[in-house]
Length: 175
Image (tube, rainbow, N blue to C red):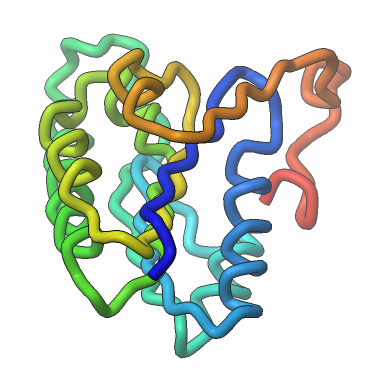
């Protein structure tokens, strides 16, 4: 039996989810089964969902309402907290389930960093994940406790991004 692995891709640079989905492709190539739980994101037409969501070995779950209001005290935040709470329940279930070899928690750091869900719940689930389970987490502003819990942490650093030059999001690159 392989050891449990907890990997985290964070930072302000592009490529966090891209790296995570590359790992997912690698795992699926070895016959593993996966659960993908997306926090915050609400677009069901992105390339990774179209591809991985169509595979029988991937259970794709999306729990997001899109961009957060600038005012974090806005009543509109309630819908985001509710969606993230449902995502947390799904994540806890996937982490405890022997059905999945890989659990990908996309944008969980963003959800944690914006107070949508408590970090303690996810830390407890990570600590109880069985040997052999691979947990991959993504998002900006990873809390220090999550960084401490992971065995591999990569910080993506932004050097330059096309958006800053007026280049809009493009299929196959950003979505």
